Length: 175
Image (cartoon, rainbow, N blue to C red; front, side, top):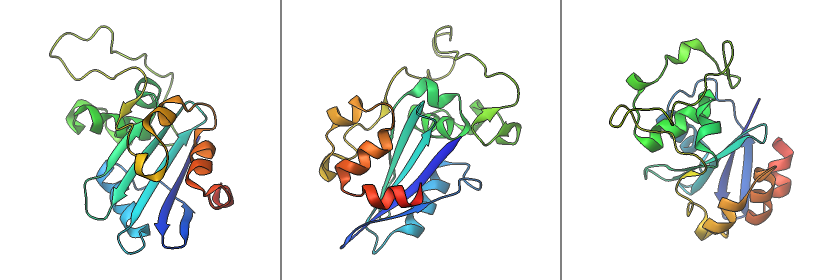
């Protein structure tokens, strides 16, 4: 099960809204959703978490390209939304992945999950899904969360991030 929220920075602090990811199939879709929530083209954070297995942060600043951090590439790669983020980060395109129609977008595929194929992949076959964090660990540095703090998060990471950003009450209101 996923939890997803958008945090939009304003002059008065942060505004949060929970968000449905039903129509999100690509990082560009998620960035567009975040831009719609933006106040005066300011920063929007899309936070995604799957049952404490992994979390992701997508940062959108105006029309700039989104920046992405995923806490665990292998765990995220086993879920539809996590795979979408990881695929973008490692440069795997849609032709390298399963058709999204075959996925149950609650975070599980039909049947048993396939084991990660990163260990046995032949050199040059396809990009490998990295173990552990992937993406930009400095994504929140200017907002008060250092890359070391971000890399050290586990468990209920989104609550810890909200504490550090000063928006715990706002995030908890939509949880």
